Image (cartoon, rainbow, N blue to C red; front, top):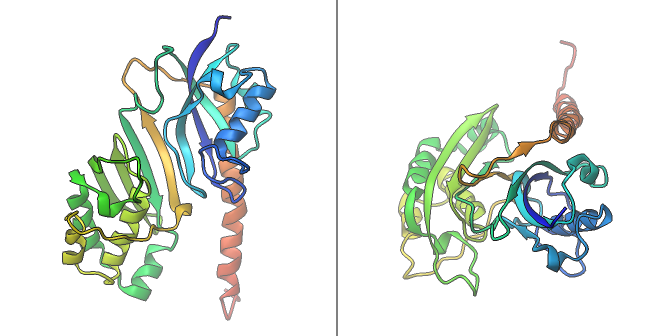
Length: 282
């Protein structure tokens, strides 16, 4: 087989052992884990020659269901051959052949993130009287084109901090607040800083006028980001010419891993809820 470039769709769980997605010297990351396995299975020899490229970088503890990367490989991909060497918290579940000039990063047309607020909504209502209406109003204000300088982490190489936010949706599902963000691109920590600001607004820690002042970039205001553990890179979309092939065994591997952990942590949650009861006779 002549060398070909493929676009792969992957999931990963942002466990403590991984220092984010992007390669870092002397630290284990999601990218490095994938590169190691691709070398072991004979798909690449050197990372540089493979033109390995992640579509989006994520910070430590952030997870993904539909992250993507491109790579020039030496043979036709067999996903379960790769997955069998990967740890269960990382897996490739779909792929598409793409032109050699294709970029997983720059050819993406939409990125979709979700954020799950760690505490149940009923707990937030009881303890802080959280105002969901003002939070929804703020989410609407974030839609459209804005300068998100005060909603992101400052980076030397980023000159233009304007972004077009397609949608920002807040909902309550199974007693949890869920934020959804869709845009072609995001700034560093943009979503997590927005979450922190909107939650502070809902909890009455800042006024709506303070929130609106953040759109005025004549004054730089630094805001700490929300906990990364609730953030998921849900999906990345490309134009209609890209046809992903889902591998059924690899997708089953992914879903079985998710189900196993849901059962595991669901039991622990119920255990600690039960331990709070004074009387368990019912």
